[in-house]
Image (spheres, helix red, strand yellow):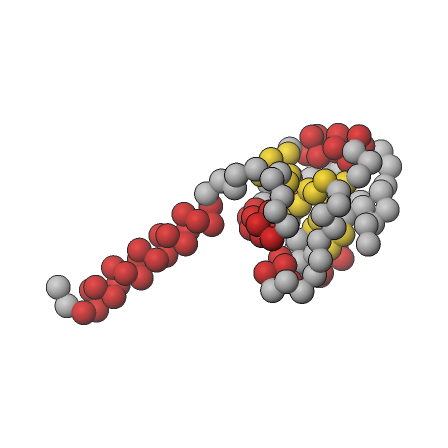
Length: 135
């Protein structure tokens, strides 16, 4: 076995490890479908809806009442997250929101957080009333 083969095996192992870490379930992360998300918005008075997409995505369309806290800024600790309320995160497909949930739970010692399963792609409509953005 030559040196380049060993390097390729090590790199492949690292890539597999990263993929497994990224897609494994997050303990304490509750997945909500669209109806569960709408019900939570309607029934929960103390709720922070966090859109972790980039500002240009958020500005096109977002869930009413959501605040924009991009995952890219969360990774670098450039923003504070309102942790005094129940948190629901979402992104476009559900991948970034899972990463954001993991970061928020770890940094703020939270045991549970929810995400919109399937992300904004799974969101079909509005709620019966709009919530004000949490600042």
